[in-house]
Length: 110
Length: 118
Image (cartoon, rainbow over all chains, first blue to last red; front, side, top):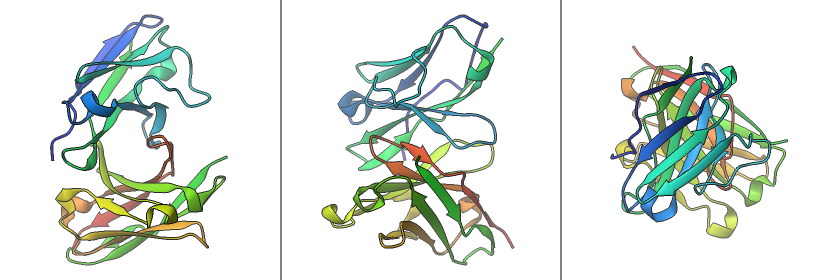
């Protein structure tokens, strides 16, 4: 089934700002927004934000999410070594009647 | 603190069946919807299905790609959710996670590995 589109990899320098993108359509991101999850190698995913820019307790304020039309974005400022991970977006798709994920973006902190 | 612990994974032959369990604690399980999500080695996340709570008649929803082979159920008296997997194929090989469906995929267990191979 159709999912969301994320770039496979992004590389950004330490202490700089990284922006990750996730493109969907009007049935998913354009409708109810997206959630973002972080996954470190060998660990389960962790929810970073939901419905565009709501952060669960304990999530760093260096992370912010947004949406423009059918594209969701996750911005991470002041990049730290521990930010190096895989990042997934997710959204409810009202046409597929299913939750969909992006393929994930591997963020490398240089 | 929310805790989710999956169990029941293992090696199963193609065409076989397996039932996974997820034990929950640290939140009001009976009032919560739960997801199952899987991840093949080196691959991304794939949503498997979701079960709602009693007030929503335990409604279930599944990924279309599963073609009815998987069934999610729950036992609120035991704080457990289950994933019954039938007619297993090699492409079902993955780590299977249960996840609390509060705002999104709020909390995750450590996962249980299912390997489908002869």
